[in-house]
Image 1 (cartoon, rainbow, N blue to C red):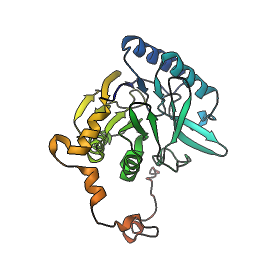
Image 2 (image 1 turned 45 degrees about the vertical axis):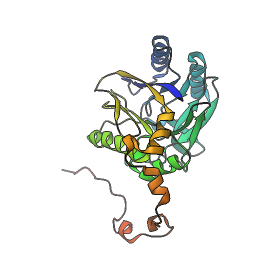
Image 3 (image 1 turned 120 degrees about the vertical axis):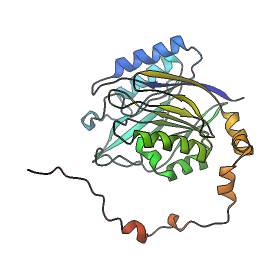
Image 4 (image 1 turned 30 degrees about the vertical axis):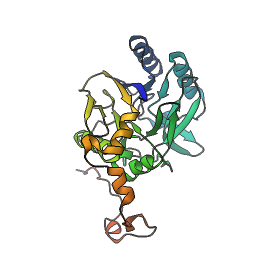
Length: 282
């Protein structure tokens, strides 16, 4: 077995400085569930969706996270916050190990427009390794709607995808379906974590066959799960319940997808420019 115990914190947070509230929640979880190895937080949990609160990384905000990870003795996948880098702002998720060392900063590749207008795009998928356990990818909210992000993380070896989000819109039902589908299509554990207060909850943890391991409702909830990455390897080897070996099928098919060639695509060009609805003037 290659087990890891993960706590996903569906917290009720405000558009405010939530640092001490998050610290209290993390320390309580570690005290009650002493087996927890990793804590996953939600998108923009630290300050809320306020680009005026963008901070430089490294800096005081990240140092707070580092101390929290070290004090709790956990891997901290710190949701996200807005990062100021020169004249750009990114939606960034720091990943911190139990020694308090930053092992990765993942920048959201697909900001959700128009709500994140002015937020820059990250330029790469990333994975990090938990020694003796396996490889983990990070995806932030709208990223998961673009299937190529999942495919690339899987190609980098991800066996678990951690997905902090902050969704308060009516498409949450679709996101739940996409989360399960991503788990099944890419044969990974997929941890989709939303907020309440700033979001509408309904977080979920799904296995490599798309099976539901945990699902939250609409209030504050702590999801605790033990993942076994050997199970992912077995599903990829034999298929979920002996059914499709999806990644091997993708690898072995003698087919070329022109969509991945550089250059214009007539169908996509015909869609026209990005359009946002404007409020009517009366």
